[in-house]
Amino acid sequence: MKTIVNYIDELKEKYKLESYYKTMAYIDMERQAWSKIQKGQGLSEKNALRLAQALKIDPIEIIAVSNALKAENNELKLMWLKLAEEKEKERTKKQH
Image (cartoon, rainbow, N blue to C red):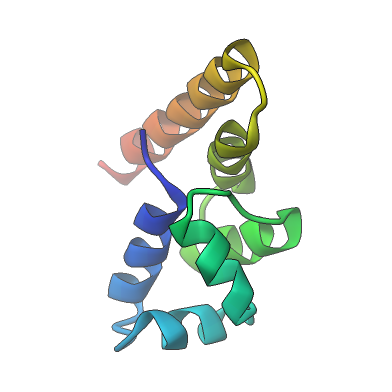
């Protein structure tokens, strides 16, 4: 499963940002959000949208990953993961 950290790494690499702090600042994300991301707690919708806009990808992909991380039961988690995987596949097909 792709995590929010993977998307942050993608952003950091895409814009050649020197640190995670600069990456978070680039999308105007608060420092405490990074702590939550590192703990695997997902993102707020606002931050998911900012991250998706910066990466120029469908925000549903990141929101689905984030919601999977926050899901309280396995069935819901699996549904969000499936949606995230579908969106990622769509995106990678378009890039090739």
